[in-house]
Image 1 (cartoon, rainbow, N blue to C red):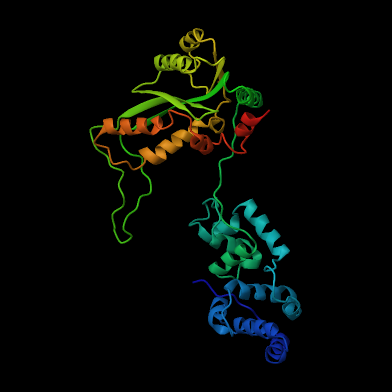
Image 2: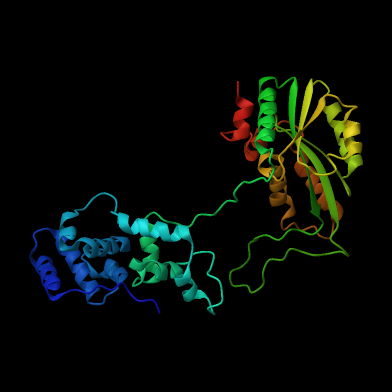
Length: 375
């Protein structure tokens, strides 16, 4: 069971605190000394903050007084008057940051692992932080959280580091940005399209869904029919307008890619140049596809660096489609209806869409958006 914050006083310290609690002319000093004495007598700091003083205080306030007293003694309690943000110990902040950035080590391993042969955990918990930071070993779990909070430390979701193994990454990225700048400067003559393929299935993708808290049953991503059939889409997103064009079929291979190029050549028949930004899928570079492209001289492939989906905004359109249509849908028994819902979602972008451009990052302050706005 977690222990309360503890504080040991010498006879002289207790005597000084009692005198200032009973006789100091400054109310804030009397209050702080009273709180420190109560903690030294074994009372919980949180309980003191709610019921042990003349008025309720935030628990962090009492913990802050204790931190000040342990660092600076009675003089610190007297010198630090009301007002302003809570002071933080720079030494403690540095200790916490150094420990947390290095990751859990042996002390954390001893705290949570079942055997000595097990590896240290990869992520911090309040328990492992407490045993790993010397100044926190006597704190309760909630006390550890409050110390972290006072030092402006909080849990934040991590993002995946963007990294491509392509040795020509910078050169390919520079070409992409150059094409976007050209399209931004002459949007009636030069079109920039982001192309990609995606597949989806008849059965819904599982996701969080509303349910009664008292119910023992969980929401179900329905499974029905003999098998989980798949369908594929090839699509392009116009970087300047937000228009989406697509083809879908059971298989998207060489024939569909060539047919899609033919459609793009017709849709953008007034453009002088059509840049089609795409990844390195083997079908895109198949000799049959490259030979067919010779019949459409205005279409110029722009190859992305390998494994760099962050440079292809249409990936975010697929994410939107999955979130709004494919996760937890109720049509596992109607494969035709599922495909129709997907088409209806994409058809809403058959004309220009600033909302889509904003969603995928082609409006705003991102790298691709800035290139489009360059003059």
